[in-house]
Amino acid sequence: MDIHNGSLYWPTTYPERGPRTVPERLDSYDVVIVGGGMSGSLSALPLIEAGLSVAILDKRQMATGSTMANTGLLQYSNDIMLHELINQIGENDAVRFYKLCYESVKNLETVAKSLPFSPDFTERSSICFASTEDDVEKIKVEYETLKKHGFPCDYWDPKQLASKMPFSKPGALVTYEDAVLNPYKFVHGILDLIEQKGGHLFEFVEVNDVINVDEFVSIRTSAGEFKSRQIVYTTGYETLPVGKRIGSDINRTFAIVTKPIKNFKKWYQEAMIWETERPYLYIRTTPDARIIAGGLDENIKQVPQSLEYIENRAEKLSKQLQELFPHYKIEYDYSYGAIFGESIDKLPFIGQHPTKEKHFYLLGYGGNGTVYSMLGSHILRDLIIYGNHPDADLVSLDRKYGIK
Image 1 (cartoon, rainbow, N blue to C red):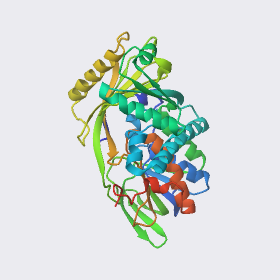
Image 2: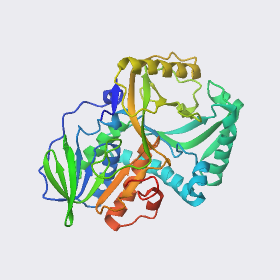
Image 3: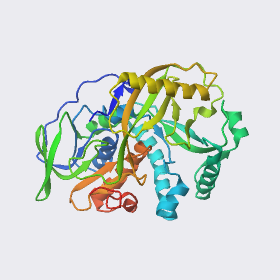
Image 4: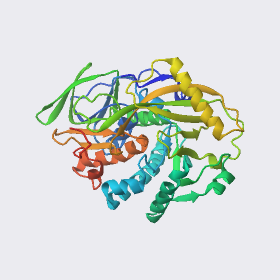
């Protein structure tokens, strides 16, 4: 499956590197992880730090799948608002899930600071504006719900929003202690750290089949057999080697990266921006003074092959951005389309397969995928090492919309 098409920005921010050195394969590993992107690298790190032998397999060069198209927005808020999630799964579980997301943003910062080089992790606020007057009440209810449960946030009326931003909207929810990073540098930094700590990375190795054999899983690949006590699938939006996603949807989105802007005047703390409309527009800045804007999601499971069509979507995004920031000269250097996945219940797929022993999954579906990957890495570590985690039931695979 093609994951993205068009001109990508993140690879220009990090020196091009050749394939990673293939290590001498162990007779068996404690854990083999299938997928060397955000979820795979974050899953491997705590397992290696706990003393387990770990190998990561990827059919591509690592970090060249969805990581290259990831826009690097890190928020504790989700595509499903907290008050909506409360209605879906109950107050205690919904609030706990949101707190896990909040903690995961902090944990991502800890990982970022531990890397051999900076992945440009920067704390940012987020502004979610009401796209129409009809959405104001939803924004207010969410503000009251977040505030009640101790999450850092504010509500801005139109006058307050207009005093801090160059556009006027019916109202906005502002959340604090979110962040942005460079996902491409971040994953490469984690992979470098994993190698330093003794993890084995195998690129251009495709998994063809996985079979349980006694206390091991036998992983049949294009490079021969790997043996492991446990296997973790972090394959993102690709077809799973084992198991089937129930209640997931694959769509595509578009993004542009502008030319550098001279001055981000009247942009409150360069906050991330998104909205209540679905599909929503999402916006952030970069360390080299560019704007990344994405959206125009389409319910189509394939990456657009036509560069002309990508250019058409890019022009539309550029116009939307120009309308919000009329005093900026909006021109873009990069434009692309990419695949992304969502779950029907808006929760990620994390945990052990309901019936297949030794098989674990971390699929961070949704607009908060990097945060889900961080959250899931801790849950999987404890499930693999100790056999349990107190919050595993929130995202378990045996729910109605899980993995079978």
